[in-house]
Image 1 (cartoon, one colour):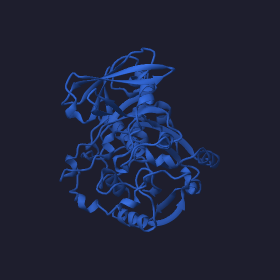
Image 2 (tube, rainbow, N blue to C red):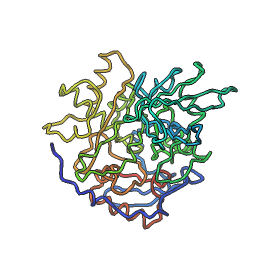
Image 3 (cartoon, rainbow, N blue to C red):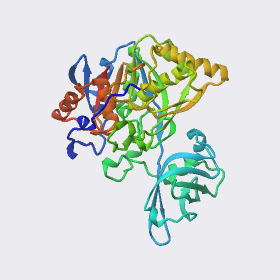
Image 4 (cartoon, rainbow, N blue to C red):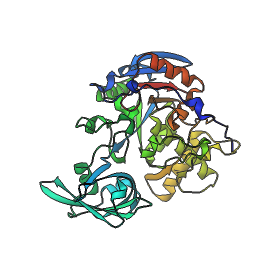
Length: 402
């Protein structure tokens, strides 16, 4: 494998607590925008994105929707048990399907105050929904795997409606605060549609209907992908050897129409957020797997892109292999997952530009940014700090060209 030795300390920087944006700005598009192209840095407002994107580019955004994944139950003793939904286990692992389930479901979770909850013990709560009181139960099935079964006493109510009524929006841990009523709308993109993420694709939080309309008038095309962001996006790298970091698997949904539009498009492709770029690059590698007969399952292992492949296809050839496979199977929608780990030495195959916020020091996302900017990432981040940019999920934005 073509994997360089990477010193994680080289991707650290000092992020003062006061530079972390704890709350969103009043207007989504009033955030600052750092523009990096041809090693030159310029400063704009996000509303200027309509001038900076070329008219022939294709803008690809992630339409996942954050679910209220944090559920609080209280035992008769008064002890509070916090259950954080991670990924579905049964009766299906397909997120859109389990969201619509009207019968018991099992999730892998994180559990707060787990020592107070015994295996097999059932916790109960009440929620007001559709002018009636619904009883929701949570049973700890497996303490080691943190598998929890949820059931409720009304088979006409879907799981997604239940958690919308009783769950909390899972704000990033570094915000270190409880969610407010405002977070219910502001920690979602305006184009969020497919429920299933436990963290927002925050690069898209700056977009407004007005900006999207102006881009359309300019001729900029848009497409959507769906990657359900997992809590692993916040997991710090603890391994001395970064390749040993357990990359989070995230579920991808893609329509054949999107694949065909990507094939037919002749201009540059710009990703809105690291989740979109991970999706597009993962699709490329899935196509490579099909062309190389490396398996038909859409699962991109974290280090697959670093194999010794020799000559690789252009991305359109790779995407054609996926479209052909979908047509062969008679399907219009593809579900898969990716663990792709993008770090310096990675060569981007699909995307030429990235809209993204400013990320945590020493994180997998900083490594992704360094894959785009090389050593210049330090200069970009220092420039942002010196110009009072707000950092992380509710912070300011950047447009970076590869």
